[in-house]
Amino acid sequence: MNPKYLLALLLGVATTGACFAQEDTLDLSSNINSILINWSWQAQNGDTTTRDFCLMEFALPAEPLAGAYCFQLDGLQVTDDQGRAYSANAFPVSNSEQSLHRDYRLLEPKDGEEAAPRFRVKIENPKKEIKYFRLEARLDVVFPSRDPESVQEYSTLDWQSLYEGLLPYGIQLAFAAQSRSMMEQMANLGSMSPEGQESLNAFLEANSMYLQEPLFPENTNLLLEDPDKQVLKIETIGPDGQPVPYKDRRSYAGAVLHLQQQYAAPLSGRERVRVTLSTDKNKVGIPVRMARVVLPW
Image (cartoon, rainbow, N blue to C red; front, side, top):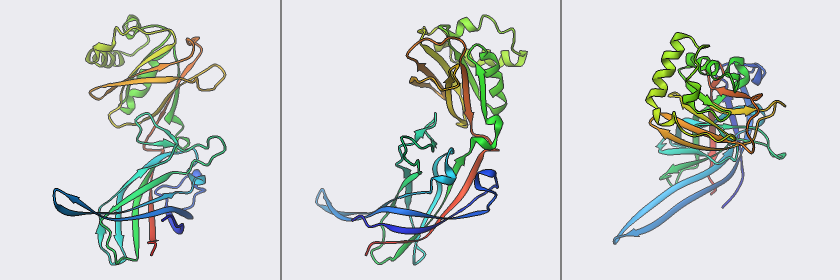
């Protein structure tokens, strides 16, 4: 059964900002695309067991979230019309571009399609006599435009400034390009502060397996330690100001991500590395409440 239901959806903005025209709340609407109720009986080893759940899919309005990284519904609470609480999980079903750590998705229209954040919510063991559900959660959203310092760019030849520029955020990012290994880059640290050199030496020594890794001319090599998962995106910007397309290969050594970006042709040395961060200034928690999700009977 796939009926459509129109819900009133209130988004209370935790902090004011230009993205929401300084409104404290937004009166928006959202379509429930489908509600599937599954009451099924299943025999296992001679015992009869029940597997009951309610699965529904919905989309949040795209316009006020355009250009944001979001897609986490935290603190989900589901109750019915009699006040009973249910175990429930929310998970994304959008095709939007995933962030580096895949915790967030960038909401940008592609090929003329609206990039609305879509979710499915699975509610365990719903009671047959209920009339409707109430859903409450918090949508974690990152608006990079709220913090100009959250988007940083450095020349691919100035990897030392890139490394030191991210240290105040608790992030270590070592970058090698133009067919140089990280060991070759370590030969000249003259432009780094003594504190930066000490930090970098310890970081690379702890990940020495990657120091001598051969690097093809069309690849870049990155080592990233980002314990709070603040790095949303790392991209290479060409001389024309446009991102250079690439495929990536990644592997993890403990908490450190080893990332190779593979390009169609070698870099010229005129490119820049752009890093987009989640910070205290650009991250917002938006309360989401669906007051009356009517079930289809």
